[in-house]
Image (cartoon, rainbow, N blue to C red; front, top):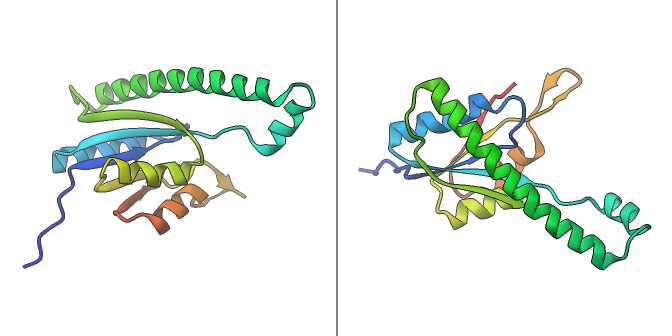
Length: 163
């Protein structure tokens, strides 16, 4: 007899966009069913090369790096507060007293790469993420991060329609 895989840790990746609540509810529902802990993750994308090039015309590289480092610290602190507030509001809305929260992770990088890295680091048994935060020509499409994570993950990925 093949054992049923146990889900003890769920990595919920969010962009904190307009349509994230259905995705969050799926992550919490699975956590309740499996008595699992949830890691809420948000990835902040760093400056693009184009933005960096424009800024470098006005400032030395060392100043840009310092500003980016300080700015990222502020962004991470702000996003952690936002994730915590979102979680509390959502739990109140669905009647859960306490979120089965293991950690809140806010990190800078490319979303798909950081999600895959975090899944490995935290030994996630399931990744839950939204399908996309955008529409193309009026139609829902799977975002590049969702596609890449689904293709490369070593654990199951639940992609939730979120529009």
